Image 1 (cartoon, rainbow, N blue to C red):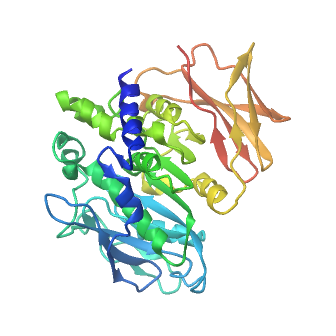
Image 2: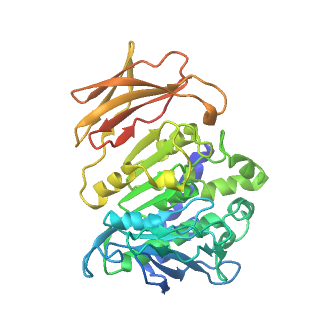
Length: 413
C-alpha cells in the first residue's frame, strides 16, 4: 500500500504543472542548455553543456556526439533519428557507443554522469575505430565544475537535504538536458528520439522514461526499481538511511515513478544478474501501465559492452523511430494439463521457442537454469509444463532475424 501512495504523490504533483518531484520538467524540456564544443575533429565529437547547480555553483556535463555526418557517411543537410546513451557505474561518455549508433544511422549523444570526463579519444585513420588503450579509471578526470560523483554518498546518503546535492536528481536532469540539446541540432529528427542505458544507466533510463514523454522508445538494460527490497545489492545502502529510506524510495526508486511512464519500453536483463534480480525486475515491469516488452537472457553477463550488444535494443528502437519491423510480442503463458501455451504476434517469421526454468534455491545470482525446446504453430508456442519443483520460469521466442523476446517471468509459490 505504501508503494501505491508514493506513486500517487508523483502523479498528483504532475497534475498541477510540470514539476514532478525535484524536477522542473518545463525547464528541462523547453530550455536548450548552453553548450560549447571541445573537439570537432574525428568521427566522434566532444562537448560540454550546462548542468544543474551543485553545492551552490553552476556545473557543466561532458558528452560525446556522433552521427552519420560526423562519420563521413552522410552529407550535411540530412536528418536522422536520435538516441541518448546513459552509462552505468564505473562508466563514462563512451565514444565507441556513440559511434556504434551513428553507424546504425542515428545521431547519438552519450554524457558522463559522474562530474568527470574521459581522455580525448583518437581514431584509426584507416578503420575509424577508436583507440581506447589509454582510457581507464585513472585517466577519467573530474571536471573543475562537474556535478556529483557516482558514489553511494551522492546516490543515497545525501537524501533529506537539498535535492541539488543528490546524484539521482542530477543524473535524470542531465539526461533530459542532453535530450533537449540533441533535439535542437539541425540534423536531428526531433520527433523520433530514444533512450537506452546500462546498469545504473538502466536505472536512470527508468526515471527518464517516466519523466520525459518526448522519447518514442526506452530500453533499460539490467536497471530496475524496488532497490529497497529482496536481494538487491543496493538494499543495505537504503536500509542504512533509517527514517530517510522512505523519502529516497518516494523520490528516486523507479517503482515510484514508472506508474507515470507512457514511453514504449523494452526491459533487458539476465537470469542471474546480481545487481538487479528477477523478482524486482518482474515487479518493475508490472508497474509500467503502458506498452512494454521483456527480453531475459540466460546467464547474460553484466557490463557495458555486454549491455549494448543485444541486437534487440536497436530493433526495438528502429521500430519506434524508423518504421522498422517490431519485435515479436508474446502473450501471457497459460498452463493447461501438462503443457504451457503462449499466444504471440510477429511481423517477422518466428524461428524457435524455448522454455527456461530453475529449480534451485538460494541467491538468484547463483541458480542454474534448464532450457527445453518448445514448438510453434499458428501463432501459439507450446512447451512442456515446468516441473513441480521449478520456482522461476519464462518462455522465449526468436524470429528469423535471431531477435529474441520473452514472456514476463513467472514465479511458482
